[in-house]
Image: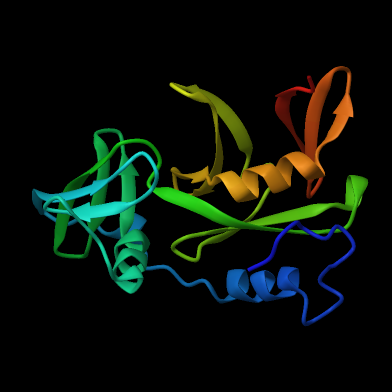
Length: 190
């Protein structure tokens, strides 16, 4: 959608990318998966790889609408990840995070800054205390994540991660990211 986030664009401009993401966020309506308690349980050969790509029986999902549909009924429980309907609960394999944040938009600056991330399944989250950002060490260096909803996290793709680094401020030898009154540690500034 865009290159670098523009800190001065914002919700006051109804044509800004930030305003578009706010509209998408407001329109989000997900099924009441947490309320569904189906008695039939099983497993399905669906795997979400460590880069957030969905596969069925070894083949990559080609239809993004189908991925969005399945992501809308995805639930994390103590025993793993499940696709849940009122009549059935099916275990799937998730290698890392089930979602992938692919877009970043920013409005405001400093303490007034707000950052929105959009996932490949069109979930939109504002980085804040309820949707924290963190880094976890991976085999090839730190991997960035954000909490999306109901125990589901998203890996932040490289391009939006670099945008977040560009938005960070240095303090006490560390990079800090501010959004919606919350502050997130991006690690050493060197």
